[in-house]
Length: 99
Image (cartoon, rainbow, N blue to C red; front, side, top):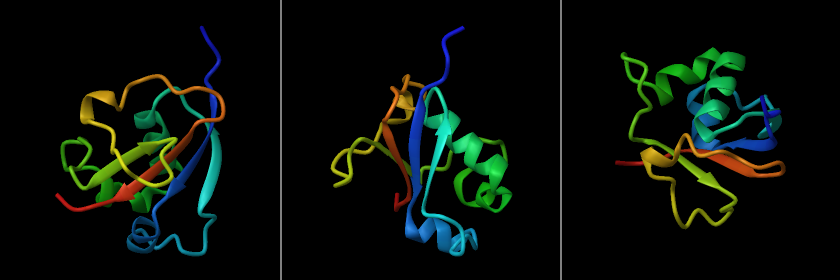
């Protein structure tokens, strides 16, 4: 099995505020194969995120946006891209947006 890439994950200020994580670091280094796996790792670390990013069935809410290597947030990932493999050094932004 391939080792998981090491990536940088940033939570948007609004998502950090809603989840009461403002005292926590803004960005984290972790090992994750996909953007969806990044989210799962963050929710495991900070359970208060769950209600803001998942519905009752455990599906990612439409207001949860992902950007990979896109600091200007020009193109959010389509839902079918959330399982695309990440590379070492990728930067993932998890953003609380509007539908």
